[in-house]
Image (cartoon, rainbow, N blue to C red; front, side, top):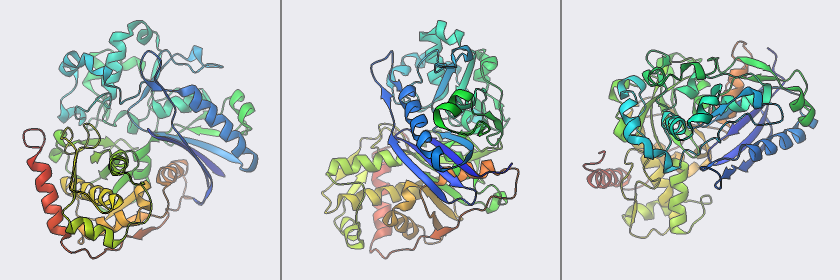
Length: 470
């Protein structure tokens, strides 16, 4: 199929982003907006109508100047929509609100749910905080709102919900189903035993490839936004897997470890050993867009970076010099996890900042680099690494990671639009039009005592985490 301009709808936990890409990958338009939440309903949820209003309004502005031929939606993986299509036109189709995964209320059914969820060796989904396991969310909804749950015709992963709003065709997709949900068995490439045990299989819409065209935009959508009536909507994809997809044209063993960054930092190792994944350290297997498992380690990187800066009263961006970084090392100032409230390799450890840094931003950068370095070691990654997403624009952080891993080639994407570029690959999946953008090498910086600082940081993290997950 010929792609003129691709519109990427990227719905993250923190931000919404619309990006228009030309066929050669150049960014023609980009706009972001903080995500919308509802806190006054039956439970905290995503304000899908506010999101929809922002989308159609912004698309209306974009469509005037850009001949958009295709749309691809990418979202985070810990959300699903329970819909009945008869509630579609003029309505959002939802029989229940789309639950906010950070809400702890779903844990009230843990005793029952934990008896039902699959073994890690089947689902490769660790037991995660709050509603980060999508299966836990759905189980809670099925018990607390059984009438509404039963009335739903389809369970749609979050990306496919928005695709359905745009084109009216219901579908599921493997990278979304296999994102720490408990719902998928990566090695068998099918639904997990949990889905069969609870009798949910028929509620999931048909599984379609991320790159498949589901259909044209609905006439009311075309009329409201000014999109062409033949604008085609792809199935859509899990956001980190969009970043990873760009490298799938390479031989599996030659693929770099992709470090996808945003609210979450996810290190994705195609050739990683699944048997070495430790569920107690927030390691898991995601599933790529073809259904193959990927060894992953993750932590809530963007959230933790911001939290450190907030605690120290500094901005999350700005100048961070070598002198600033050296001062933190020399003064033996440490940021020790967990700043996210339960995620990452030291999830549940009491966060602390040891001593007072002369530069809070320098400490936040050191912490982020040390965490990514640890994640890569946990995955046994020794080859090339590509940093994608928001952290790829942080020169100090990228240089620190290169300095911590002098034996690895560390590169970064030239822009923060890796999810959008991955969606462009999907749009070109069955053509030879896609040209992957170059990465740039992250140069090392010289810091005295960096290796010793890393060792002491790890020792302190592990010492204070004994008995929990070290």
